[in-house]
Length: 356
Image (cartoon, rainbow, N blue to C red; front, side, top):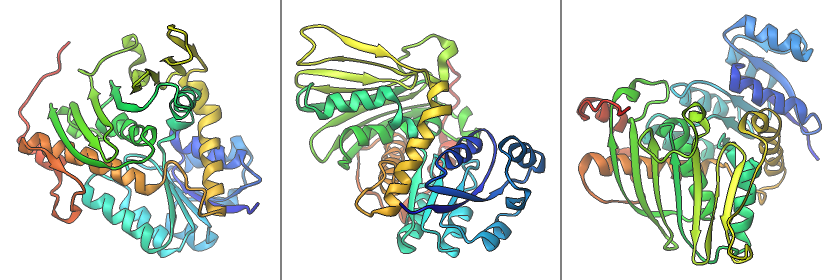
């Protein structure tokens, strides 16, 4: 198996998790460059992991010039996406890994996707909840046919659209085996979170029909259904797949449940390791191992590949357009004709204070 040279920008909380995964998979990746504007963060991580100071940089371009990596990983705030992807194209990397949301507008998301296609870059976006034990169990139940033919794939998140909504839109597509959406209708309200680093309306609701006839209903934001105490806000989310003979659900905190053909009239389930444990030990290494396998073999397409991520972004864009224009929106969208929907919502949405 080939070993891939990696250069990474960003060593904050999520950046550490990415870098930890590359270091753990030392038979598949070699970390040859690590860049951050904060020299203290860099030095602290390097000291902790006993990394050579020779691989540390505060300038991404110099790092890429010096290292000529196979893989470029950047872990930055959402407004820093396109410039990093343009660097990936310029330096002809084979693989690109970055965080969600993939962009802050559909036009930017499409530009990023096109750069990767034009330069034959295999790109993955961190919708890593798919590797949770709970999600894997739910998917196995569905794929085995234990709930019959899939009818609905629904999702709820207490966190807003650009925080966890993009995750769960991606998991809806994953649970429905990648079928594309035909149309959407949607509702949004509340503008306070449009000023957040991950800009979003306070609440988003959408209804989608997919090409295979499966439908999805989802809610993102504090009005969505809650399944946990308030202190578990960031993991209070759920993906539920309904079939002709039952259902199966999973959440981000290691829990799953199901009512199936084989459960003898009982609701079954399990509580596994929580989010904090799985995020720090399990998810990113599995995610990156699959990335290495895809780099090896074109047929081993990563489940978090850029094409499925772009379609998820497109669906959420259509939900917002539907809400603002009071219409059904058919897909695909023409990204070049789409305005900056977040800016439009900032300008047009009325004030709508949160309910207690």
